Length: 140
Image (cartoon, rainbow, N blue to C red; front, side, top):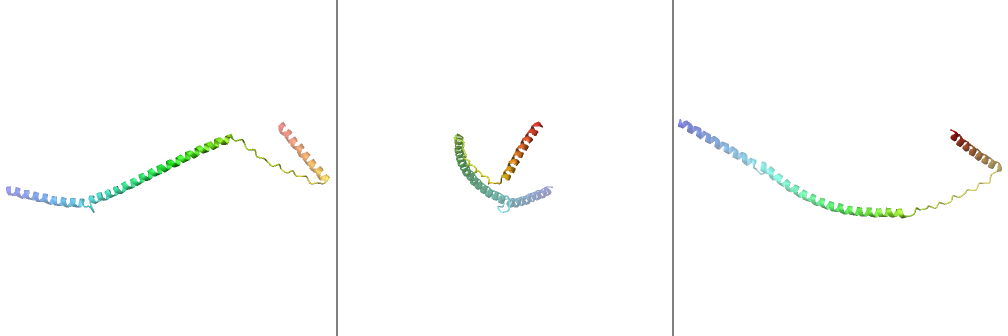
């Protein structure tokens, strides 16, 4: 009976040793810097460094842009103040009077007396009709 127990104990020890060898190989492959998790960690570390540099340059650019924007805003506010003063001073000025040139009067061409009588008659009829239309409109 002792002999069977020793054989089973030896078999268990050999199985444990074989299992340890297999685990050792897997662990070596797992931590390999080129293919395993170690490589992934190394790549991620490099990417983190690159992202940190990019973030720092973006922050510097943002600070520069903010300073430039504040300067431009200050200039714009100054220009707005000047424009307000100019507009306010425009209210104090008198209204401009535009001199209109007198329209040249056309001298009527000498016409025949019959043509002049006809023009006068047309003007009288137009005047009569316009007054008649006004009276008709008032009556309605």
